[in-house]
Image 1 (tube, helix red, strand yellow):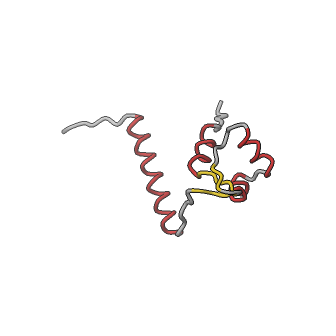
Image 2 (cartoon, rainbow, N blue to C red):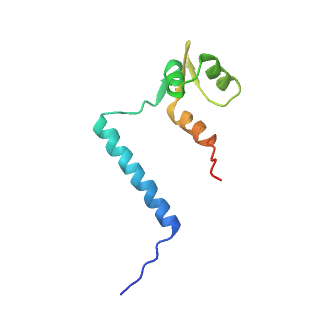
Length: 92
């Protein structure tokens, strides 16, 4: 009989894979597709912030953007990165 040890790292990898699979299933069933580029009003609604706060995030370089004509676009991936980077863990 062969014994196979499972490490915390193995469990963590499994957890990530499982969550990604569940997310994919839910997304597919709901017919939801993430947009790659969002306009300012979509970002404000997503983050529940004012236009002034969004402007401050652009000015101080927290959130990158692309401007085409007079329309400003934000990459959805960049928004997620900012949220992950600023995540606060208050566990004691």
